[in-house]
Amino acid sequence: MTISFIGLGKLGLCSAACFASRGLKVIGVDNNEEHISKLQSGQCPIEETGLSELLEKSVDNMGFTTDYTKAIAESDVTLIIVPTPSKPDGAFSNAYLEAVLQELGPALKEKDGFHIIDIVSTVMPGSCDTVFRPLLEGLSGKTCGKDFGLVYNPEFIALGSVIRDFLNPDMVLIGASDEYSGDIVRDLYASMVESAPQYAVMNLINAEIAKLSLNCFVTMKISFANELAALCGATPGADVDTVTSALGADSRIGPKYLKGGLGFGGPCFPRDNRAMQHYAASKGFDLRLSPAVTQVNDDVVDRLFATITRLVTQPGPVTLLGLAYKPGTHIVEESPAVILAHRLAEAGYALRLHDPLAVKLPSQELAELGQLCETPYHAAEGARFVALMTQWPEYAVLDWPRLEQAAGPEPWLMDCWRIARAALFHRFSYLALGLGTKDSGGA
Ligand SMILES: NC(=O)c1ccc[n+]([C@@H]2O[C@H](COP(=O)([O-])OP(=O)(O)OC[C@H]3O[C@@H](n4cnc5c(N)ncnc54)[C@H](O)[C@@H]3O)[C@@H](O)[C@H]2O)c1
Image 1 (tube, helix red, strand yellow):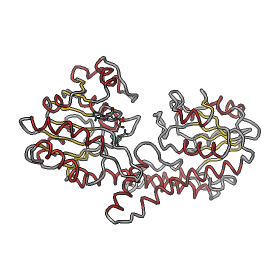
Image 2: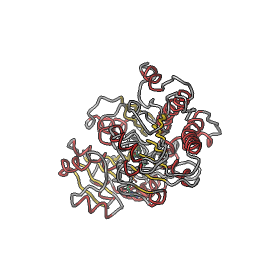
Image 3: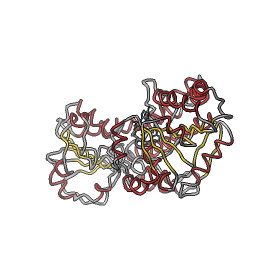
């Protein structure tokens, strides 16, 4: 079987390489010509763990083009993984997907035989039945479910571990216009994955709702743990790690995403919550949990800001160690660290910032926020307050005496993930989210 991919970005290129590495023939299409010529000349245009090695290994099974017609004519299934950016009202835009379908529709018309169009991009519930199906039927003159199949097959990968997650899913979600298309896509995944996932095959609307619900549920768990961390922080003797390790041991709950620390950020979780709220409102339904999850997430940054401005009354240098929304990525989109940095900068604090990846290719936004430093020790120089923000493994093995030596007079250390809890400090006054010490005051 040959499969084609439209959109070779962070998710699309990794997925294409995974299928090709298992022996399937893959045609990759992107409208970014520079991106395609890099791929054609054997370069890897995306930073993702293990991707360049996988591309090298799979090169014989992959071809790259900007020609959509070829993708339809020479393949059996076309997976579409283009952006679906959030609109100001929180809904996802289908504009990129519709542009791709406008290209694919005429090619579908010309094709003899059954072809499956598989939408992988995250979409608003209802998009497949009310937008994509009529659009494709109109352009091709064919009937969905009879002459071609429409599938919604979103992924649950995390940046930094896209390939590992893609090869080892717990569950493969497949919404399909017809039984045959659902079976073909299920078999496609079965030939590729290394784990033994559950295949959740259903109709299109259920799959669209399931995709959003899953991410909203995970963020609900994160916010629960973060609220618990705040409560433990306000309770002398309490320790959120001890409490959550008991909770996580219960099989009804499980330990993942129950750490208690900074809130969630990145390109998916915050926007999926907003999209769910928008979708519910469009159905005249007032969701209660999802807005509360977002509020609890915002509260974490509010409390950190209040703690810093309470303890460092003369705006002096504040150091943030870690800017990415999670370890293993340079992405700072909706990162709690960057949201906090904006608030501190607006309040007049001079910021010294470090991140193992994000400062290497800094955006204009980061460069304007504060001084970007090459090492954590450099970042801590003269600081009145140092906050360990992103849970990078590098920070767990910092030379603590060197860090506190670099800091300014009477410095504070805020440890959002309790990675330095065993260290002995001589100069730092130590605070940690989730540990109920006298000074934490529920920080
Ligand atoms: N990255 C993630 O962590 C993640 C996780 C789950 C779901 N998703 C979803 O996957 C989708 C894609 O995300 P991404 O992170 O891979 O995006 P991305 O921006 O990294 O990549 C998108 C790619 O699509 C290409 N593209 C845009 N318009 C095109 C067109 N008309 N024809 C051909 N190619 C086109 C772009 O050039 C780019 O290479 C989004 O809906 C996103 O919500 C992403």
